[in-house]
Amino acid sequence: MDIERIQTDKEVVLAGQMTDEEHMVMKSLPFSSVHSLTLFWSVKESLSKVLKTGFTSPPIDIFSIRTVEVAHPVITSYFNYFPQFCTTSFIFSSYVCSITHPKGGVHWSKDSIYQLLCQGIPILDGINT
Image 1 (cartoon, rainbow, N blue to C red):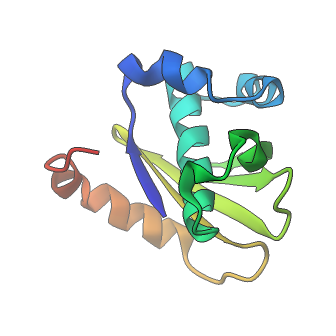
Image 2 (image 1 turned 90 degrees about the horizontal axis):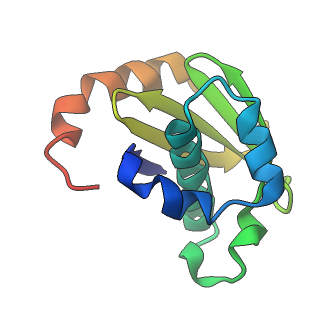
Image 3 (image 1 turned 90 degrees about the vertical axis):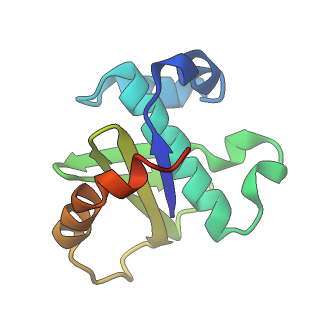
């Protein structure tokens, strides 16, 4: 799992970490540029934690995102090189939360997770993410 604060001052840095294909996918999303970039970064960070490598396994393109499905409030991302996983993400307030899990093997209430995240915003605002 990964939680990232959406910050416009990180937009240029995040944009430089995305592939050309990812930039094309982002254009099809109903989010602002900074929201999409933070979403993709959070998705990649979450996958890197599942793999227990962090971003120490170069190149970062190994975490590239192939497709994204949006069914508000749930955003599901699929990977080019890790087809056994997908990531469920939520954008709420000024945060993105991403949870990577085995594709097709998780049975949980995504709406309940979203509601819990929304209720936890005062807690998150006290954390420097």
